[in-house]
Amino acid sequence: METCYLLLGSNAGDRLKYLHLATEAIQLFAGRIIQYSSIYETESWGFEDRTPFLNQVVEVQTDLMADELMKKILFAEMELGRLRLNNGEGYSARTIDIDLLFYGHHIVNQPGLIVPHPRLHQRKFTLVPMVEIAPGFIHPILRKSMAELESSCPDPLKVVKFRYNN
Image (cartoon, rainbow, N blue to C red):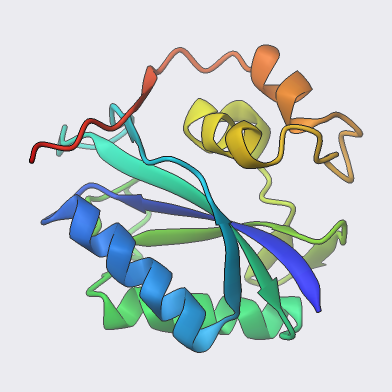
C-alpha cells in the first residue's frame, strides 16, 4: 500500500457535486480515502471563465503503481465530463481536475507523469488544503514541509474556506 495525495478542482457546473462525485470515483477506481481537507474556493487564474475553483486535497491509500493510479484518475475525470483540449492555448473551465500531487515519497518522471507535481509549491490552492491535512509532509525533492512551502509561496491568489449555502 502507498499513501498518495490528490488535488481535486472544479470550476464548471455544480462544482460541489463534482468534487463529491470525484471522491466517489477515487474510492471506486483508485483506493481508499483516509483523509479529506476542507473545501476551498480560489479565484481562477489564466482562464477566460472567471468562475472560482473549488479545491480539496484527499489522502488516499492505494495498491496501484503510480502510472496505474494516473490512468484511473484520467478515467475518472473522463467519466465526470472532463474534456482535455490539446490546442496549447492555456487553461479551460472543467467539471473536474484531479492532480496526483504525491505518490508516497517517490519521485516519478516519465512521459505523461511527473510526481511530485512540478508546480504544487507555487500554488496556494494546493498548499493550503495540503497543509490542513499533512503540514509536516516533506516534499521529496525540495526537502521542505508543506507548512514551510506554504509560508514561502509567492502565489497572490486568495484561498478561502468554502461557505456552503444551505
